[in-house]
Length: 121
Image (cartoon, rainbow, N blue to C red; front, side, top):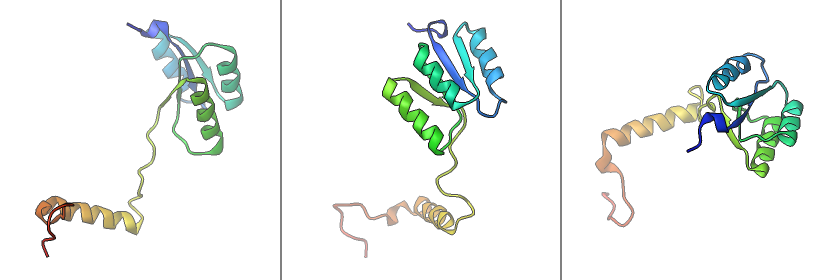
């Protein structure tokens, strides 16, 4: 069974706010942990040291996408430390329509036409 003490974890902390706390948590469990405050440092670490997993904040900017692609190519697991934004913003009219449709369908499931059954109309 793999334990944290068997893992080498890289924490990418571009903001400089979360890395030290995450590092303390993993070090407490005896995992080997490095913290990178930029992608160039993170690239150097995944190129020069054994890394089993990388913790990084979710983002869709080109630098993050390229870094995640490099992790995938090396077979290194990426674990996001923040949630992606919701697919539909509450401020967008389309999302309000989707929420309304879901509510109607939840209240009247018998009104949903299922493939292979005759239409109720």
